[in-house]
Image (cartoon, rainbow, N blue to C red; front, side, top):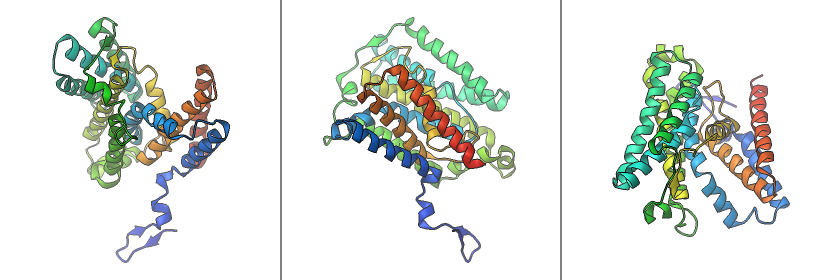
Length: 324
C-alpha cells in the first residue's frame, strides 16, 4: 500500500522498498535453481564451487551493468562482445608488441572502447540510425579491427601480477577481478538509485520526448550511455585477458547475447523505463549458476544453449504477461 505524506509526496512501505525493483520473481527462480542443483549434485553447494561461479561471471557481470543502462533507455547494444575483443587486442598489441607499460596500455584500450561507444551513440542520436543497425555495424567494425591488429593471431604472456589478479583469492575468498565486479555493481546501483542522471535513464526509457520536454538532454545522455556500455565491455575484456593470460580476436563471440539475456532475465524491460542493477545481478547469477550446474550434471554444451534459450524465452514471456 502507498501512503501520502503531509507534503503531498507518496511513500512506500519497507516491503516495497526492498522488492528489488521488480526482480522478486527472478530471485525466487535463482533460489529454486540453487536448491535443485544442491539436491541433484554433491559438489554444487560447496565453498569452492560457489567461488568458482563468482569467478566465471566476472566478465558477464561487468558487461551486464553497461547493458542495463542501454536497455533502460529503450536501446540495444549488439557490439559489446566485439568491443571486448578490440579492447583486449589493443592492450596486448601495445604492451607486448610495442613495449608500452601494461597499465598505460590498459588505459588506452579503455579509451578506444569508449570511443567505439561514442561513435555508436552519435550514429543513433545525430544520424537517426536505429540502435539495432548502428550497434550491428559497430559489432562488425570492432571485430574486424581486432583481427587486423595482429592479422588474426593471439598474443600470449603478460606480467605475473596481471594474471594473479584473477587467480589469488585474498582472504581466501575473493580475487581482485571479482572484487572489481562487485564494486561496479555497487556503483551502478548507486548511480541509478541516487543520482539525477541515473534517474533520467528511466525517464528516457519511459518516453524520450516527454523527457526532453522536461529538460533532460536526451541526446547527450544517450551517447553517454553507449560510451559507458562500451567502456565496461572494454574493462570486461581486460578482466578476461587476466583470466586467460592471453588475448585473441575471437574472444567475446556471442557474449552480447548472454549479456542481454542476463539483463532481461533480471527483469529489466526491453521497451525501457523499468528495471535496475539489483535485477541484473540476479540475472547474471542465474546464467552463471545454470551453466555451472549443467556442467556438473554432465550436460553437453549444445544442450546448454537450448536450455538457456528456453530460459530467456520464458523471462520475456513473463515480462509480457506481467504487463498485460
